[in-house]
Image: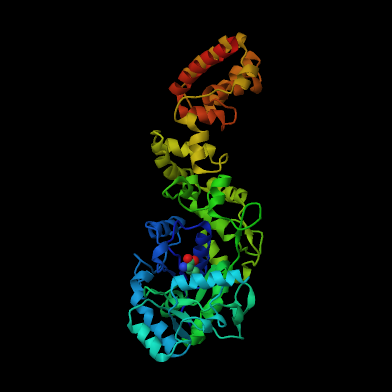
Length: 512
Ligand code: GLU
């Protein structure tokens, strides 16, 4: 049986968009499901678009998601190097082979000549300038020039490119695992440059040569590459590799949250949501983006969310661990139509993962964030806070934001509750409660609860008279977790101090 080898082949032209992470994830899932190999290949032949830091970003993003390659730059493997710029000497011979076999040709047109021609076509009403099987015979290339002229030009050192000679009047059929049979008319295709004037291959040639040499069995990539696949099939054919051509699967587009149009990198800033896995600091604000990681997402929730952007298991189950996804995933269940980037769903997934995490595991994630804010507490204390708040929050930092009062004094008391619930004439009773609590021997939530209940009975107060006052006194809000558990965690001394401060504040507010 053929080896199962899948690759994720991003170009390091900037931070990896969340759609790229989905592509990587699907490749990873299928590789794992079929006991195959997942490869990272960096497609950096276009030096003009190279962005420093982008490759590190890609590697870090995959690491964060827990979908690390088996082979790739920094990972090793028998098919390296895995950066195309380090393979550049490899591609020329295939371009020459194609020229020799009559499937490619030298083109000597300068960029200025091409511009002039494009302009002339435009003026003649032809807006889609294409260097194709018709136009090629009017251009300066080894098909129109004599052999001697071609030879002289090649020897002159003048720059030239090599173009694929797309046959005319044929239909190229692609068997796409998602879309079924897709046909392209070769008359619609241009003669793509395969080797540039700097000797570097273009994406098309490098991609095909590398997929072949790296023995890739399946190509899973975004829909935007579907039209190029016609050229790729021709390249496989002309290089005599067609029988070993990988299976293709083109993933549906990711649409904006409102379902209208393709999700763009700018949508994140516009809507205040992340569309990148990790934050990226670009040269200016416009090119800087916040990541899912920095937003406070659990990477497992992100994987789960991304897996469902274009795929579903065909059952009602929605929560899948990465291992579960590896088992359940299949290309047959990938949809053809665009997948809406429903951020509310992403939030929902994160809430599910937060709730399902152990308090201790959450504490491990939250502690470094807490330290950044200057909150220094023990791991036990943090785990207890996480336990109390995890059902009430969406993102990791919410635990520190909503629950700030666990780490510092109350900053703002809910004035409305005070107005309604704080009766100045009851101050002596509440002071009695305070001293009663201060003297408690057992300060467990249970013991506190029975002390408070006793106090209510003695004074003929109901829960509604006492609990909101205590809650607001200790946390500023009535929306917090169980008040008795909160008191146990804060501890006797801290509760006593907070009550004293709060009562004073309540009085002042009432007086004003
Ligand atoms: N380098 C291409 C990209 O950046 C790869 C497309 C493919 O997977 O063939 O998306």
